[in-house]
Image (tube, rainbow, N blue to C red):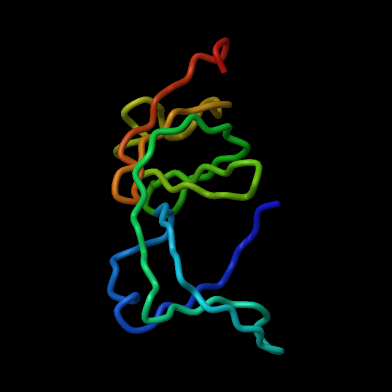
Length: 123
């Protein structure tokens, strides 16, 4: 079910400071199909970008350590969540001895601000 989608941000929409791994909500896009690049979505003068905040329990299907030591969590739907090394080390170690099945993540302004262990019996 998961996948990737290409979004091209133009004008003011390109000024919002977003990076890989941030959770965002983008509205008011226009779809375009190119014979070379396939389907992509482009911002309009009405495009809005919202940096999301939430707390959620997620099932971890995969995990990898990125260059620089940040941790990338992979969910079953293909969604990747990047956790800063310092935040990961609050409850887990690097190298990862045992991959957690479930974690609670707190996201503020689009970035993971906290990762907590979930008791496997309660998951």
